[in-house]
Length: 513
Image (tube, rainbow, N blue to C red; front, side):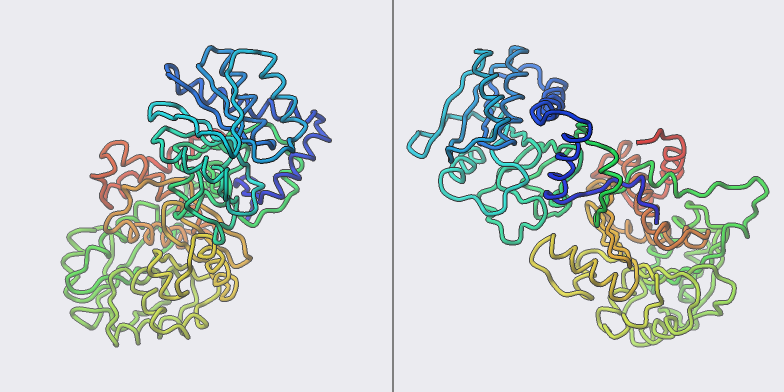
């Protein structure tokens, strides 16, 4: 896969190196780069907050605090009622911090107060705007003592908190050894140039809040040449994956897909996945269903062809596979013994791209030895509980992702771990996080829709990697556009299917990121 247009997620150490390269090669003095970064935060606040009774900015003694001091000066210049609290837990201050502290004092508008271990904590009202610039992403051990008390005091205030670059107390990547009781709980986090890996894990949501990336003009050459294990999906990256249709195309051009889905009483999954597959552009789809599912599919999805299983109520045997370009299996097939036997048979005989979802993954969870029999480049699409059944439990988001990547590498497969920022692990050790989608998509059948989308792309000749990332992004984008009309609470899986065309058109018409 081509990574040139996907967003990169760097470690805190890598970002430090990119900063230094920019300072040396733009060239730009470090204090001016700090000014540029602070300016983006200032502009973000200016665009969103007009009438604020009080702005209280808490700064540490490092460069994150220096950013906060520069933001304070800019806000004070625009007549915002600013108070700066220096959380003085050390006598050592960075040089750029010192320059910005002096600039703030020389300006003489904002009130500044030094907080030490012996001071009373400042009063914070729920209607104050608090800006957190105490610690940056270089923090490597949990907060304790005086800084932890200040963080706890801010969290208890109920005020809206904006964290500059990262919430104080949060580590940029692995927080498994951190103390969650002493981390700022931000309403907004404004990250410079790149998101932090920690932002993509559900256990950090209460700290990060809603995050935005603010470009600060770091040097593009070093960004391009620095490798990253983690990426986030962008519209331009996905747009570059879309295949252009020839006017002389016919239905055979876009593949014939086979969907094995449904059992008695659970045929909705087959209907949703089939409809999604068609809406994503497959030329032909055959749905293999139990005999008692025939009328349901024929009436609900007249565009689909039907292959009937020998069983009335479950999937019990595979059809002739010769005519298909891609196969999807799993949604609502159940876990009966004859179903599991047929699933095993499929793994032995299939020689086209395969996507496995839902009960297909649950069968793997009950028979982990089958993981070794998965054809290379198979796509699995588990939700977190299904993933646990094949991979075991982990203690936190970071280690969950490490396990995900480990399994994808070990079995040379693609794993799509569904969630708020769906993670796609590749056989080469890379991992992509999705940036589309909304909580309304946590609804029955949403995963069946994703299976249909990915199956359709596989059948059209997309590589498994491109089918996985493109399918996930389109699924989320269609859900976002649907939610704008229905609202998140009222969103159902069929709405996602109905807005797939809108998602395609938006991508095609979009400008580069």
